[in-house]
Length: 144
Image (cartoon, rainbow, N blue to C red):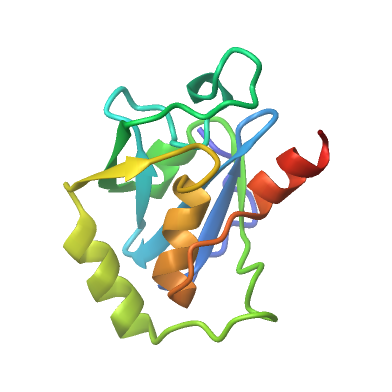
């Protein structure tokens, strides 16, 4: 399980960044120990590198993701995580009630995704700020 020492429960509407080795998976905290996140039907987070083409630069086309509500520590597993509301200095967060109702309304739905154009980070930033953004994708593109 994830390291729970000095654990402080996130606030509702907080973005959770989970380190998965060479990439990050993102979720949004909705309270009572639960997060909502975008994943693939097979269980991989939508930002997982294996969902990119063999070169790692070509996104999978016409794929679908599923929005799940799960216990934070089940999603984190043995990885590390932190609260990271990284765009608060650029965008005004939506109200917590709007974030939560929007997130809950998407649970169980399948949505189109693309590793570079709409991944798990795009999903949670859209919920928090009303604008889908992925800093992770920007870093990846700047490496090429």
